[in-house]
Image (cartoon, rainbow, N blue to C red; front, side, top):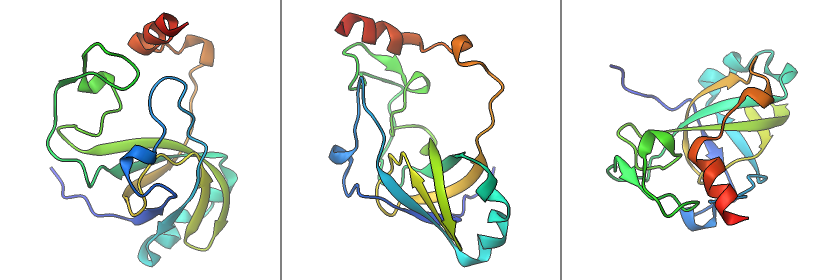
Length: 148
């Protein structure tokens, strides 16, 4: 096991969870800034060449966890590992953002869904060899179909 250490913090327009789009058809289009701490700035070398980034972050304001819960997009319960719920045994979030530009230790991005001040645990370039037609959306596709 390890003890996580933030490498930076998110600057986001969202001050509380009720402001973050959730549920079916939610679009994460908000702009934000990943403010990497100065001691980790050398780790951003060459990141400008990537269009999208995976951001691992901490649900630092979530309390406790539930193994089953009904997400906002469905009234049926699902396992926490089949959802994006913040109430997880290990409060780790994952978001894919679009890198717009880098200014020193700041990454200006689109697509944030984190609260302002959220601790960033890691940043990785988004690389996927899985064709989009092979991706499945599980119970979410079924919930979307019921909404039509």
